[in-house]
Each structure stands twice: as structure tokens, then as C-alpha cells.
Image (tube, rainbow, N blue to C red; front, top):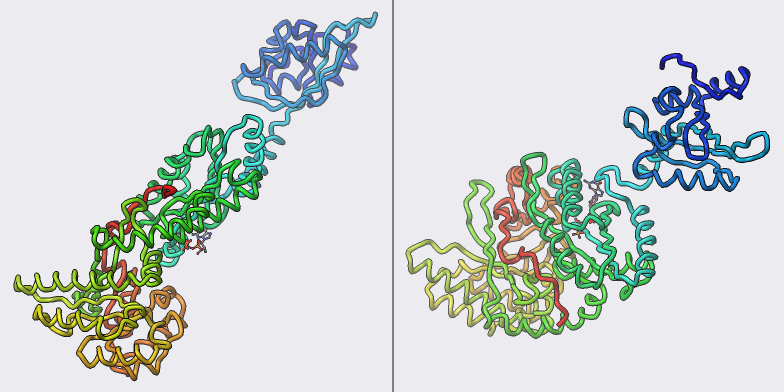
Length: 568
Ligand SMILES: Nc1nc2c(ncn2[C@@H]2O[C@H](COP(=O)(O)OP(=O)(O)OP(=O)(O)O)[C@@H](O)[C@H]2O)c(=O)[nH]1
């Protein structure tokens, strides 16, 4: 800065001039019209204007456009003889940059006590404000995604609730939990998981309105605050957009394509809760309802709870007609020979696409089908479909690939008569007896009633290959394996989770494969997802693999984004 005379107020003695020029605070005086009358060295360095450039100029020359209204307010207070203490504001430097200042402005009096202007002492607090901002950002934001964190979200929610109450508006809280995110970490690594979280955060942010707050609550949980709603039904299309944006494949590490989905719960103010805590809790509960009903969907808290029972009744009712309405389909999952990669067999899995609710997870409809006994009709339909397809292939001269069907305890309790029709029909179609296998869950074997044990023996004797499904997931009943005519064991996917990562899990799998082979059983590993798992299983002698690695993750009907569940 040029060494121009800086203080031009004629009434200050040399002593005071040197004191004022030696301070690091800007010391400025102005008249009652806001015209600068003195400007010390520190003012020159803080604002970048020399005294010559400022004296005689309006003080507002250093005010940003959006703060111009502060000057009349300050001058009015000075005119009333009041002081403005530690006023924190922003000013603009000569180079256009902004500077945060804390100013104390006091009235200046002439020798007769009349107010003639104001003195202002201003301190540059830019560094302090930036440090405070950094601390605030760290305390209120998630470092991975840069989204607001739980604490910030709760603060915003509390503020917006107060506003919604005042303005008589609605407000919504959305709770989102990614589905099966753990699998991404487990199969592709934590870094890829992080990458997915960052991309998911960006997608969710882009799917909502500018005024909405998206936060990361931790792990794979996100929340959205939707303020200023006229009615709750505005939330539905937003929830849909969020479901859709998460359902589109993600590219991780620039190359691996991964598909996930999200389960959403919605709670509305005021109908579902009046406070931040209650709304968050209810949105969370509704999110769990979405998970329970098959994931990849959104549920509204009140509707979710109210309609829970109604939905069950409706699904139970509709399930009875699903067969005749053509809503069921079978998806064939290949069992791949781990030695040469050939497909030796298929498992036929049931899919149900409900006309209103969309794809319903088998984990939802199978228990209903069992409770109501409808599973017997559905089982018959599955058998007839499989038999027809096999007969068509056979007639066309193609080899019949063996297929297995899941059989529930309810079907087993129906006795041999139920299966006799299947066996007769299979024989009538001149299909190979060993080309139809039945899969029985390990749990059904644990304590089979006498009738079921006998039935399994009869089926085995009739040449029907029997497979134990989900072996190793529950109470494995090894003695049954020996007594019944079981030909194959399917290891539960949970056994593969830590394969190759954790030595114990790897040894456990190996031991199960050896044990099965000792008993003369073939082994299928279910839930094979990576080439590394496949190679390891092949090395330990496992016969077959089944899972995403072999069946491309095709969306198919089971993976459609379902409709918002309308209250029936
Ligand atoms: N990569 C990564 N993983 C995280 C982070 N924070 C938590 N996790 C993992 O996120 C996973 C959350 O899994 P859950 O939500 O319990 O389970 P999920 O696999 O999503 O299954 P569902 O929620 O039942 O669909 C856990 O495995 C955590 O270890 C993180 O910052 N980065």
C-alpha cells in the first residue's frame, strides 16, 4: 500500500493519529449522510481502498449490494444517539472479494454535544468465520457423501416443523435404506461400497426438489425432508423417482455394473406425527414394512400399518385367483457344473406379478400360500407348466434338461396321492423319471412327521430325485440324510458369504462338501456371485453352482419397480 497520508481528520493530534494508524482494526469516521471523513491504515489494508480513494465517498462503497439496507438502519440509530455494538456483517473489498467484519459504531459529537457523525471500529473476522464454517460443516455433514448428517437433518426438521405449523402446510419425512447393500461390500469390497453410497447420494439429491433436504443418517440409510407440501399425495411421485433412480445400474470403479434398490418409508406431518423424533421413527417403521413386503418400494406409515392387515387379506384372496388370471410365472435358474461350466439342471422358481401391487416377493406370498393351503394348487400349476415345457422339448427332439421344483411341508402333508398325479402325468408324457426333482427345505426334514418321512421314502423309491434345499441354514439333521433317499444337497447362500475371506468359513464349506460326498450326495453351492467364489468351490470339489454369477441379473418381472401401494 502506498504511504499516503492516511488520516485527514484535522482535529486529531499527532499522538492520536499515530495510535489510530498503529492499530490493526479499521478506524473510520463518517458524517450523518454516511460520507467518509477519515480512514486509517488498517482500513486501507482491510478494504483495499486508500484514504484518498474513500474520504469524501459514501461508506456504502464497501457494502455488497444485498447489504445496502444496513446503512440507513445504522445512520438512524446513530442519529438517535445509539451505539451499534459488535455488528457482524460482510463488506466488499476493492478487488471485489468479500470480507467479514465485526464493527462497533458510535455517535460522534461536536463541542456542543450535537451528533455530527459516527466513528466505526471494524475488525476483519474472515478467518474466524471461515474456521467456524469449517467446524460447522464437519459437525453437520457426512464426510463421505458431503450430505447433511443426522444431527443437521434433525435441526432442519425441527425448524421446518415450526414453519409448517405456522403456515398450516404439510411436510414429509422419507426414510430410505438400500437393499442388500452389504452384498456389494462383501463381493466388491468396502471401497466399491463407498463409491456406490456417493453415487446413490447424488442420485437421490437429483431426484428431489431444490428445497428438499437429503441427509445420510449413517451406513446405507438416507433421509429426505420434504417441506412445504399442500397435501401428502405430492410425496408419491417423489418416492417413485427415488425408487427408480436407485434401481438403475451403478457403475463402480469405472467398470463393474451393479444393480441394487431401495426401500422407502414415508411419514407425514401432521397426520403421522407432530415432532421430529416421532416422524423419523414412523418413517423408519414404514421403511421396514417396505423391506418386509419385498423391498424396492415405498410405504406410507399410516397406510402401511392400516393396510398391512387389509393387504394380507387381499393378497391371500388374490393369490387364490393368481393361477387362473395368469399372474404366476416360472423363472428357470441354471445349476452349473463347476468342472466344465455346462448347465446340467434347472430350478424352477415361482414369480407373482400382482395387477395392483406389482411384483410380490416369494418371501411374502409363499407363507400366505402355505397358510391357506393354496400352495397345493400353485404347486400343481408349477408342475403342469414344467411338464408341458419338458414334453414340448422332448417332442422337438431336444434333450430334456432335468428340473427341480420346491415342495413345501403343506404339499408333503397332502401325501402320496398328491404326488401320484405328478408321477403318472410325467410317465404319460414319456419323460425320463429322473428329470423331475423335488426340493425340500432342510427345516422340513428336521422333524418330519411319520407320514412325511414315509412319503419321502416312497418318492425316493419311485425314482424321484430328492434335493435338500438351504442346507446349513438351520438345524441340519444329518441322520435324516442317511435314512432318506436324498441325492443332492444345496448349501445355503449364507455359507458362502465369507468364502475365501474368512478361513473358518472356507474350511466349513470344504468340510460340508466332503461330508456330502462321503454320503454319496452331490453338492450345489447356492448364491455364487463372484468368479473367485466359483474357483474356490471348484477347487474344493463342489459339484454345482447356482446364483447371480450364472444367471445374469436380469430385471424380469420379479424386479420391476412396483406401484405405490394404493390403499384398497
Ligand atoms: N462401504 C461402506 N459400507 C458401510 C458404511 N457404513 C456401513 N456400511 C455397511 O453397510 C451395510 C449395511 O447393511 P444393512 O443395511 O444392515 O443390510 P443390507 O445388506 O443393506 O440388507 P437389507 O437392509 O436388509 O436390505 C453393513 O454391512 C455395514 O458394514 C460405509 O460408510 N461404507
